[in-house]
Length: 145
Image 1: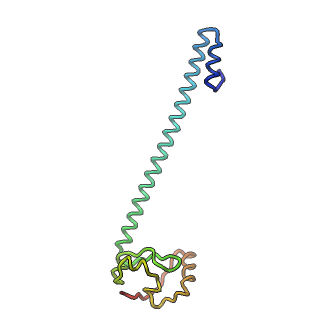
Image 2 (image 1 turned 90 degrees about the vertical axis):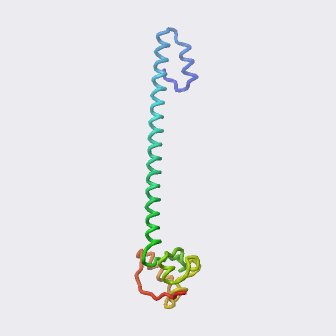
């Protein structure tokens, strides 16, 4: 029985003259459909396992991110995340405590607002150095509230 279409398969069965041939064709059809079912079940199980692994990886990454965030939030050193325009996108508790500004206040400020020695016009050059090297280290003075 070579037809993949179930209607054609039934027509072939109807044309079979002997009962033995019909039983053989039915057995072949059942075997083929059983194997197709097993293959589909295997594929679904593999997809389910891959999805579970992705969820597990995602949950692990989330926990690591939360730990990193907690570490930076509670660091004894000030941490400032700065945008390309020199404004702050994040400041930690230590930065707020040392400068006397609230987090909300600092997030509405920029480098020029807390560093009286840093001319705004050189920020683009510093930003390019930061992007190229991945970080900058320099000394600065900060203006407190």
